[in-house]
Image 1: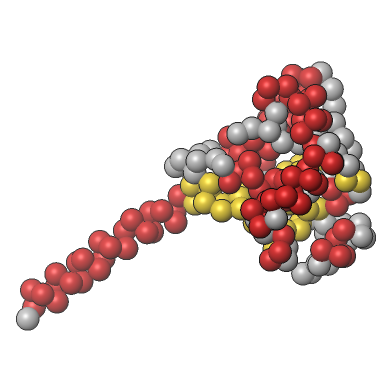
Image 2: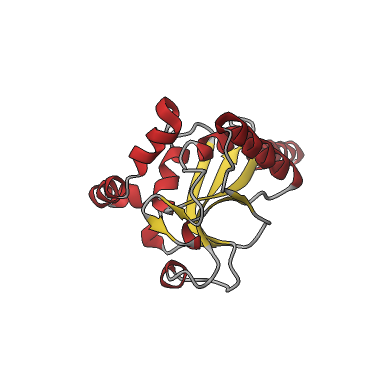
Length: 200
């Protein structure tokens, strides 16, 4: 009876190796780019992205609601948390996608949404992410020869938004397209980034 037991134990051990390796490669990144509905799609399209979650970050209160955040009194920004496979896509690429989906010259707003809750910001989760974020911001400023208003803010708790906000562009495609067009997001992105607007 020893051999079957040992064999089963070995198989069980081997079965967990790919799973643990996969989890080891997963990382998180958090970006605020105005309405979080519009920040999920470009990352969902990106190979190596495992998931995106809309939420709130950078404020003082715990477990804020959409009504509280949208009122502009909590200090939070609408943001998206990106879980990605670091062996497939790097943080540098996520930063590139971020920049090409925001207006880096708008302060305290993005497109038609006005208020600090719609500010553009990067929330590095470690020193490496911070160095890369700062370098990417400098690169944008050099390219345009203008001051970039996007903030690089301290790591802070991320609170998931209500379920109806998650994957909103999939759940309510007509309303999403109407909002995005009415807000002038794509027109402004094209004006800033040209053919690179809205990457990927």
